[in-house]
Structure formats: C-alpha cells, structure tokens
Amino acid sequence: MIQINNLSKVYNGAGNEVLALKDVTLSVNKGEIFGIIGLSGAGKSTLIRCINKLEEPTAGHILIDGRDVTAMNRQELRQLRQKIGMIFQQFNLLSSRNVFDNIMFPLEIAGVPQPEARKKVEELLELVGLTDKARVYPEQLSGGQKQRVGIARALANDPILLLSDEATSALDPQTTRSILKLLKDINRQLGLTILLITHDMNVIKEACDRVAVIDNSRIVEVGDVLSVFSNPGTPTSRSFINTIINKEIPEEILHRSFVDNGQTVSRLIRVSFIGASAGEPVMSTMLQSFNIKANILYGNIDRVKDTPFGNLTLELIGAPELVNQAMGFLKQNGLEIEVLQND
Image 1: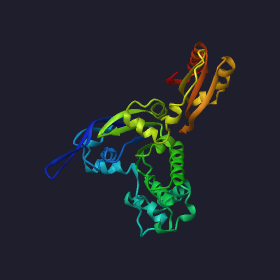
Image 2 (image 1 turned 60 degrees about the vertical axis):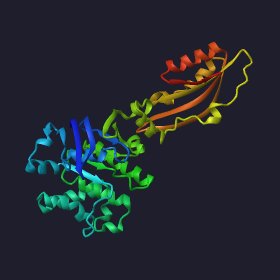
Image 3 (image 1 turned 120 degrees about the vertical axis):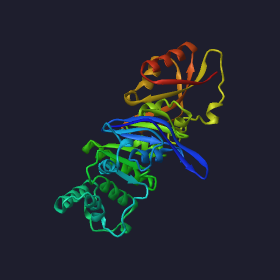
C-alpha cells in the first residue's frame, strides 16, 4: 500500500539546516492499522506530511499503490489527495457550518452531485454515530464528537488511505478509547488502510497491527505490536512500553532477604506470557509437579490489542535441582523466563 524508500527531509532557515527525517525506509500493508510512535520533535509529523506531499521530501521516494508521489505533478497530486483522508489533533472543523455541512464540504469541492453527496453524508453520520447531531454546530459538540465529525469528513471521498496525526492527543482516556474503537470498526468494515501518528503507546497497544518507532529522525524499530511489546529491541521502544507496562522491580522486592538453610535456594525470576499461554494453568501445574514453593511478589496483566500480555515476578524456593526443573517446565510451556536474582 505504502512504500517509503530512503526518505530524508531537511529544513533550511536562518543559515541553519535542521534534519527532520534521515534515510527512512518503511512499508505499510494494505488493510492494516499501522502506528508510528515517537517523542515530540522525532520527525513523525513530518513523515506523515511527506506522505501526502504537504511537505516536499529532500530525498527518497514514496509510493502509494505503486504510484510515486514524489514524481507527481500538481494535477496528479490533487487527484491522489482526494483519496487520502486525514484527521487532525485540533479537528479543523468549519465553525460556520453545522455537522452535516462540514462533512459535505469535501464532496462539494470534488463536484459530487447534491443528491449523491447528501446520501453519502447521511451514511457517514450513521457510521460515526452522529445522526442526531446533523444540524448542530461544532461549538456545541464535545471533543470526541468533533473528532467523529473529522473522521466522517475524512471518509467522504471514499479514501484508500486514512492518515491520523495525533488525532486522540487532545481527548481524555475514555473518549480516546471510543475513537480508537471507531477507527478499528472502520478498518474492519471498509478494509481501509490507516496510518496512526502518536506519542502515546496506549494508542499503539489498543489499535495497531504493526508499529514503527522513530527516534531522532530515524526509524529505529519496526515490527508487529505484540513482538515489540514482548521483546523491544531498542531503548526507545523499552521506554515507551514502560510507560504502560512497568517491568521495573521495586527495590524492596529486589533486595528482600532470604534465609538459606543449606538445602534450598531462592531464585527471583520474571515470567512473561503472551496470548494462549495466559489462559493456561501453568503455574498451578508447576507447583503440583515439583516440590517447591512460589511466592508471587509483583506483576501486571494487560491486553495488546486483543491479546493478553503480562509479567509476574516470582520467588521460587526449593532444592536447586527442582527449582531448575520448574523453570525448564515454564519455558517448555511457552513462557519467557528472566532470572533477576539468585541466592
């Protein structure tokens, strides 16, 4: 759907060059929700603006459905932009138009006949759940309702691609979840490719199929969301994941004392589980199979999109050989084991 090859963007001003993007290579598959996450100033908004050529790339190529955006003339680019919907952080609604007319606006620009356009707007109002707000003006809407209008407007010309630039960052958590659910429903019902730009890992966790992490103008990691959550490959990825799934062990647990009687050992381990393994009684089976004790000291459980994901910090106490066998049993059952401390 989208293929970005060796993309760079340099801003020139006041005698200085500012590198916004450096040698970005990335692909987005048709029909997926793809997230790009980075801190402010990392280059993510510049990247999304290069995709629809609101920003002119300094180097590299961007292909959408096999067509090179960077080589298009103005007329070709205008036609392509009609098929790329965009939703914004600040909604960008026309205050002088009611909800119905805001959604109608891009259809008017495209020259769609009135009867066809009005029918389309009515369908979109139903899709985003705002049929009863058709004659209401933006100032009378909540933030979530405004963003639903923005989404409907972005869908008016039946786009092949939907770009979302921090579309939920101005919303409270509950409203954010409702907007992300709407985007997932749209993706599923329409098969629409969605590219999400965000600085919030919760958005990635909740909605995306794959994610790219951008840091200091470069893409530092790309992968399916579950893989990145379970095994982040860069410090930047780990810092984002730690904002919602804390893997740091409290000091009082890490340094708790254990009395060694000479026949038993205490081993502090972290057990990570994903997907199907979260629903299996692996821990109870381990305790029934091996003559050891297990204290659950710390843990959290969450969901990555629709997949359970979490970790537990356990203290295993028992004969050394039995503790080792128990750990081997956990690994054989698909759990990831990290030894934090041996006594």
